[in-house]
Image (cartoon, rainbow, N blue to C red; front, side, top):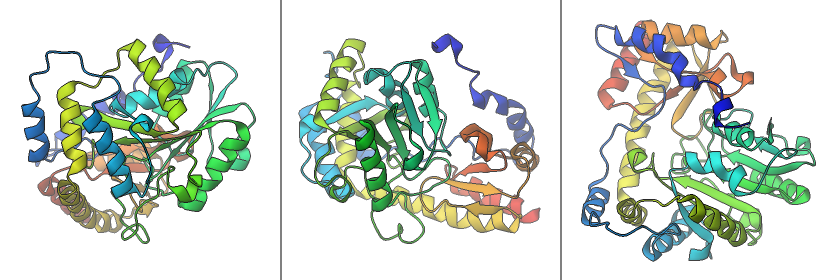
Length: 368
């Protein structure tokens, strides 16, 4: 399979529903894709502006200050001590890494790539691009012998599910039995809402309680798009097994995958400043507290959603019927079928709209 063989981009199917939502007298409330709407933090913008004299090629490996900032951030925010700069690598957003990881690891036909049952489609796309077989499964006991890459996503997109230390350990132990790489997509880890995650750090796959201090075969993937409003910067990174990171670095050098120098400077500033992250988290908390009771009043059940950037809803009807129901009220949401065949009766709502638009959506939902 190659790029030309990929199916149509699923979000293109949303065009008629978007048009319907835009026709609402008070305008559309777009809760579909989840693109940040709040300002880029000033501390980040200043760092970017100061780095615009970028006449030389940037480093694929990342600047030393950036790699040190990533290492410090993992210890400070994720409870992962002891990483070195040789264990981290900046990427051009996280989606490109998710799509390219099977290629960068040398996977191909006959290999299996496991991903969550509720998952955004790039895990499967990356497997199919190299001719590997994608397998949707959350149960380590079901992961078969040809498995070479296992994706976990915590907190999950779309369902906000969190894997605790025991769940991550089970995944890591099965990965070791199979000789597979465990790759953990953790980009919503600062957004825990329901107990215990409203007061306890969401664990990383690199947490020593998961790895027993040995990161061999384990990778953690993180993005600054949501917590720092840097989606347009394409600012992300991967950390973990130094051997795997070294292999990826060599491949990425050959492919010219170099994060722009000003973006690297902006990432360094973002990772060193926790205040803007706390501020953004509170924005999302407020919006969630407005939206969640309104969808319940409209007859939808919220499943999981204990963390992350979304509400995962159902009222036990076809997802497209729910999408149309919301569109009639000027609200655009994502159908669950975009996240796996098992989710044809769910829809996903993003918290990435302004306070005013969230309030408008809540009013429309309460009105029925």
